[in-house]
Length: 167
Image 1 (tube, rainbow, N blue to C red):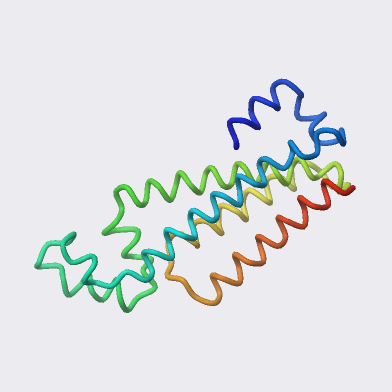
Image 2 (image 1 turned 60 degrees about the horizontal axis):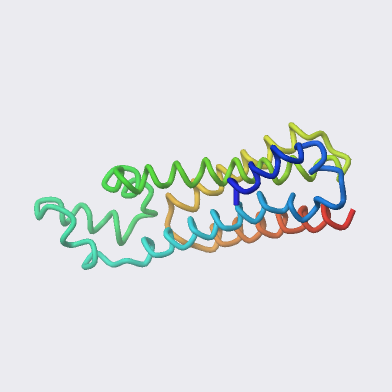
C-alpha cells in the first residue's frame, strides 16, 4: 500500500492528492495501510498473549524455566517481550511501529487541508499516537485497556478518512 501510494504521489504530487476530489480514494491508501499494520500487530500480540508456557518450553534453557514461566503467565509480558524475545520479535515490533506511524502520518496529513487543520502538526500527532499505540500493542498482554485504546484509535482514523472523502 505504501509503495503504491509513493508511486502515485510522485506522479500526482502530495498537494493535489490532498485537495483534488478525483484523488480522494487514492489518498485513503495510507489509512488502509495503517489499519493493516495495526491488525498485524494486534494479531501477533494476541497470539503471544495467549500462548502457555508449555508452548514456549522448548525455546528456553532448562535453568530459566521457572523465571520464564512467571514472565509468560503472570506478568504483563513487557519485560518478557523486550528481553527474552529481543531478537526477531523486537526488530519486527520496531519495523511495524515505524511503518504504521509513517502511514498514519501520511493519512492524517492528507486529511488536514480538507478538515481545515495544519498539515504538519496533524501528521506528526497522528504518527506519534500511532507509534505509541503500536508499541503498546506489541509489548503488553491483551486486556480491556488495550482493546479500548485500539478501538478508539481505529474509530478516529476511520472517521478522519471518511470525512476526508466526504468533504
